[in-house]
Image (tube, rainbow, N blue to C red; front, side, top):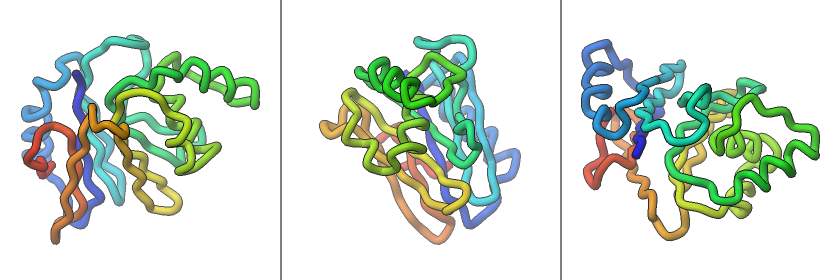
Length: 165
């Protein structure tokens, strides 16, 4: 099932708030909970392990370390996309579709979205440009909710009420 949330922040999250996020997300994926608190963004991910059980932890950063992703869903054509990137010289550390999304973004930027077939919601943070790119599948199978207020930009696909993580 998995779940993620994140925020482009204007305020600092303390350890009490972080624990609250973990508790709130636990039911979405009891196998793993990880987070990245960077200078400009917080990403949180709760995982239900299905594919690439060994090392496809999220939030995941690109090989260049420029991009950071949280992703839920399934990219049906990721094997073909991965093979195409390998033929172009790209190297992968995992067997999962999350890293393929990151590689596609590194190579094609926002245009990568047109190559995807599947059900998905994801957010990619560019640490250099300080820009957030978020997308969901065209049919909304994996929804993506967001809100912006004085504390920052918040996103989640946990429920209809945007969870202020």
